[in-house]
Length: 524
Image (cartoon, rainbow, N blue to C red; front, side):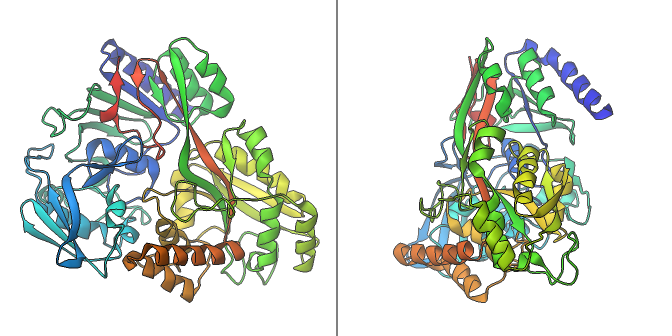
């Protein structure tokens, strides 16, 4: 109650800003986890960072590549193991320091370090070198045809600023560390950080010296970003005019918002799949009632659970039609996705037969860990799944909590059964495999909390970064998916659909990455 009141007060206090049409009051369910740009590979965290920091390459609001801090990039003519990036000249950080190749070298090496949640994207890079102030070479372990795709959320930091503020090392989020970079920022982006109150409000103002002032609308001169976890409160803020733009209109309120004078809802498929992970690798589970063994280690149990989930019912009842049932954890945007793998059906009788065959005809109980402020109707999806799994004898105890408490359970291997959603900013299956399928280790598999480990699959995943024969590469991708699907490593639920709500004077289309870059917004 205190937190809700505090948020409401913060919103009301910000309404005075609406006197200027150049202020955008923006809300969504959850906040950024940190301002350290390399500490967390998480959508809302990247989205906030994109306003202040910049990568070498961005994706525009349609998902297409667009030059950012690099003006062009290509493999070196005489060495296919080297990518050459030419940097934009005349760019300055918010504190006035020049952006140079030295900052790129520093940022990439920082993002490759142990604490970074971005290191899997950079595994193929063996060296980054500054040729001169505005030319950088990336040396890779074999030709890497998709390296640029891995850099669209890899933000550039000012080396001098990091050194001066003891922020050279990436924040250890799992260890509970807070650094200067956790709540402070110095980027090259279109907006400068004014104030930051985690989970309450973040204010940014237009960077008057932004290099892109002649390339982007930049109609918004001030951003007031407010996380509002409660769906009803979030919608009420939009309906009352306290905010101008919300990223996650609850599906039950779509009609209400769209029919309100002065408001519009814009909808599009998202490049993200929602699914359940299962700890199949442990000898015994901490959160079940089976002593001495792990029911999830039996593939038949995992297959039965997959068959018990009625995705069509979730789509119609929980999501009000706003989802696409999934049979694979890759969304249709991604290279490697096929319609055949995405087919799925519910079969309770077959699921019960598999449970009996596996020796669990009487079922078992287990805890499901679920976020309640990250994905569209995340807790409601989990609640519906509890009832579905009960039909095959599995008693599920649901534990839903904010993402800031949920995600560490996955990254720390402290959950046996959990919900996760995965977007694919590279639009390629390798990204999914590196984070979710590869054996968990120091440089890959950081979000694979299933315990799945297959040395042959690991080798195939590693080969993708340097395979230039695209037909051969795609054949390898399919081989990996064959194993993932056959072993039922995950239980796909659906591909998420985005619903953005906004005042009619806000001109922007929905990004498949759910990452509004405010510099693209136009205000009528």
